[in-house]
Length: 420
Ligand SMILES: *Cc1c(COP(=O)(O)O)cnc(C)c1O
Image 1 (cartoon, helix red, strand yellow):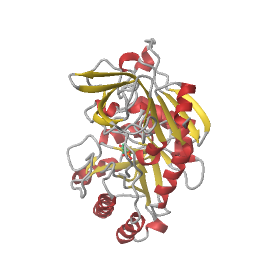
Image 2 (image 1 turned 90 degrees about the horizontal axis):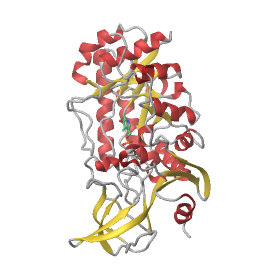
Image 3 (image 1 turned 180 degrees about the vertical axis):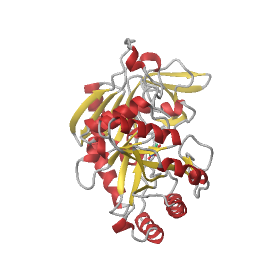
Image 4 (image 1 turned 30 degrees about the horizontal axis):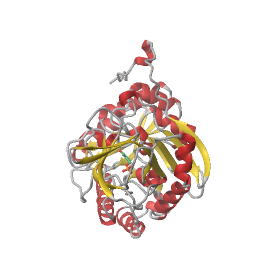
């Protein structure tokens, strides 16, 4: 009996299985692809499970530092054994309540996206009698490579438009409670190949050097972003970047000749690359039916369990198997929800499936449960099992309940109350 079948029999389906050996391997592979002086942030957005975050802290090699964007992600980072001071807090809409909590828990490094965002960080820091470091996230006016999710060069809620930095910097320098500590770029996600990645990083490093020179911008930390790729819901392996380390060192030696000794500290960040391959989604076939000539396989996992992202307009090229043998027919793979949008894959190759059969979806460790429409139609969250090889380390389920808990006024505060 396969490991997945055994786990499904013990814990039911839908079931996520994460193998920490795979996370160790991913971290090693990514750290090896970067110059050894680099800091590597893990974006908890990809998967905030504390068991996975802990694996990225412990084990061999340098720990990944947490990149967080909410109080919930902060909780996960702390539960995984990190200190607030290890975290980089990002996001264009940090609220007063979130910032207060972050500062209280020791977070001192923020990526900021607007003048008011910087002011809000400052207000929270001052309220606690401390000072915080702000990276200015930069929305570059130009970009160099093609990417699947283009997050730069266009109007955006993310970052300061690079051409406006000269105008806003004098104001930012006078804000009490924060110090401008560097720049943060994130122009690219899931790069299609090493050339795109290298092209984007080279462009970023060159731009950072130019901005620093022209604006006399303090640069203790330079976060050049990520884009490291791994397949999503289809078989395959993580991107391999044999030339990256040399290219990055070369670009930095050119533009920041003393970077290794005098700074800036240089960082990269990744979500999916570090955890994507560690996860497998195990689901059961509830029903199989034919409608007007088209075969539908109805699973107990839909966009409430996996691929909420796909439910938001991106169909996944999902592949199932190999639990039940060779792919012999084509079917539309759907979930159990009462919406025609609950589709995991259209006309995909599947084995001959019958009710009760198990299917596995590979490379499902990133953007799983927490990126899904977990609450929609009121089913429980999937069980998540963390393993190392054949050893089960933890079994859990995100608690979202089905009741409407009363909220009293103070904790209902969502507006940003910081002084302008
Ligand atoms: C989403 C995000 C990441 C992680 O992206 P991956 O493609 O999962 O590596 C990293 N940094 C920022 C700022 C992000 O918004």
